[in-house]
Image 1: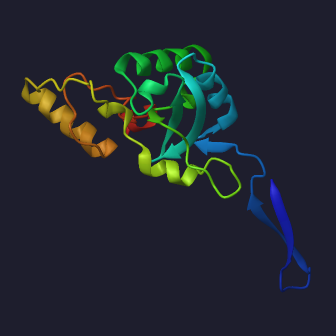
Image 2: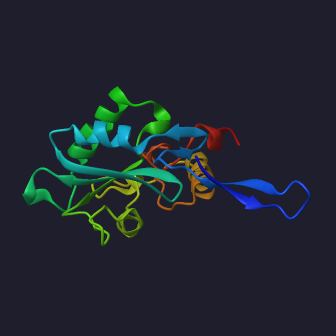
Image 3: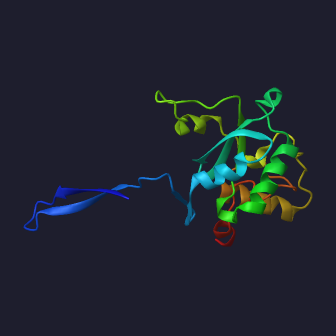
Length: 176
């Protein structure tokens, strides 16, 4: 952690002001995550040339530059499933990305580092992949549950095959 001594304005003289973390560790839903660990797991896939992990809309998103130059701007459903399976095998539930976003290249800062802030504009929700077939809701109970999910998760378009976790839901949200 980074900190600094600052004048307190009382008889004691000084207070310790916490400035934040020196490393890139983040805390998401009560779980401490080292982005480098997630990036190493996703980046070790043969599908991925480069990986960067960032928090987007309160969820962990893995931004990837694909190894196949021809598919630089899109992830097929099969590729997403392969990456999710790899994460499931090597990462605990709280460390798994909820979205995978393909890029031709990463935006860079003036210093040549990945601009994680600029990645936020390019995120698409994992639950709304292009190949996800919308299955109509068949019963009044399904319609009611879909409405609850949309309200809790703040998303739209929940259908019969929607996955709670892929839409960004957590176990804590499920019990509230």
